[in-house]
Image (cartoon, rainbow, N blue to C red):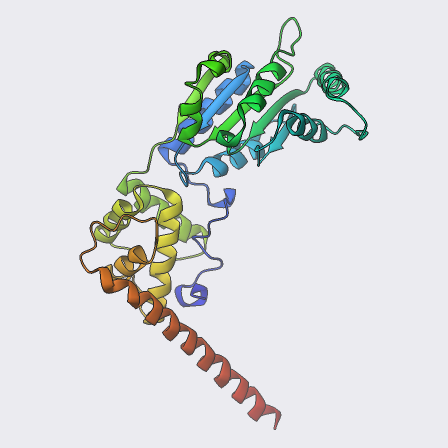
Length: 310
């Protein structure tokens, strides 16, 4: 809606993890370095955890996009799977053509043979699981058994786990102590600092095509940072709404009132620093106003075209 108003080629603050918008912030770069080092060393289990919205899926996609050609990746984005379903998912990702009548022992043998085949071809196999905190304990144990598959010199498969902090809590269970000991590399994503958020916002706007002075003041960036608790996803939500409110007023620079209204309108944002809690109504009014403006523009264009045709 506001793209043309700010001279943008695309929306800068969408929630879809897009590696085009990947910015080399310290925690994200460090996480990638840990992953790449661990993968090069051929370790069995690697773990990256972080709060909801801190960029785990984006880092995951960045990792997958940058894997060398001698790696074959099996990616499971939704691992709320039983051990049987997890084996089927891995087999499918490895390119196996399966029959419905296979039992679990037969399926495991096929997976092992496929891993050996890929190994002889010089390919290293990586199983990447996003949202790994959703894996049942039995499935986590199945993953551990997968990493038992090895030749005399190397593992046949490496496992990368991306998950929320609940995954760390679950690994404290004594029943999972064998798996925990297999995790040789791990990284915990921290929230962003306010100056990192400032660079993050400016970078995304630049990638989206914006040219000009910063749309957000330092003071407002700090306000957004506190409200978002340093979480990139919440920053995206608040920044997007603030731009929308600025556009609705016809402004060219985001103001504090726009940020405050956006924060109040964002359910998971920390609103402790917002004094006027009724400011959220501005969001509704501005959006209605923007919609009316858009309708008027459309009607004027339609009338002009009609006049020309007559």
